[in-house]
Image 1: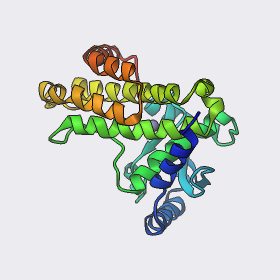
Image 2: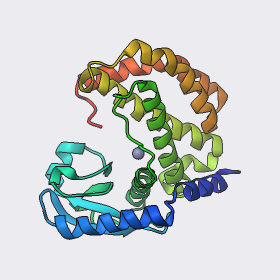
Image 3: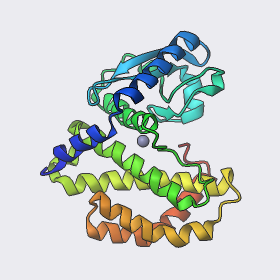
Image 4: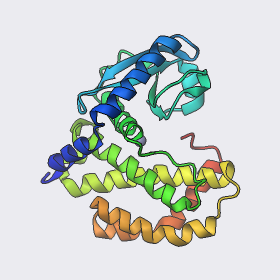
Length: 251
Ligand SMILES: [Zn+2]
């Protein structure tokens, strides 16, 4: 596991908001809790401590049926704001209320994953991707990096959530990259199929494979896997497109 905990610890420090950023966030979260507690689908909103970042983050427990409709079988997800409730809100992690008292290690590791995304929002680094920018391949890479960071921290500090950890640093990086790439590819496929008919697929793809290879290299992914993922990316994309069009993936 050489290098891993040290690198992940540096990443945690890098992602921790500074005092001014955090106090602004904390204030907005407290105002939201006062204003929007119990406004459907919110059952309870709290500031919950992250054991990794040693700060509290806005966790909003919502109605289970509402959550399932929006997020399918996810355990939690992050929204940049909850303005649909007509409330001012900072970024928040949404969790089905049935998980409110869960102390299960895997679930807590998912929460820490979401706290990584909250920090990305708080620090002004948008971890989402809507592919509406001038260069959608930049969106793709930004989203890929954001997910990689979240998985890397989640699994380094929660080895029980990632049983292959003892197999070495490379396997962990490879796994995190594959999971992040899978999510980013599905997101791009969804944008192409429904959300964004204007997306210039040809232009996006022409620069994407080279950028992908470079990004995977920076993540420390093994070189054979890096080559394979970049080369086969168009195939993964087509498969994701079929899955999305068939309605097999919700998120
Ligand atoms: Zn994530």
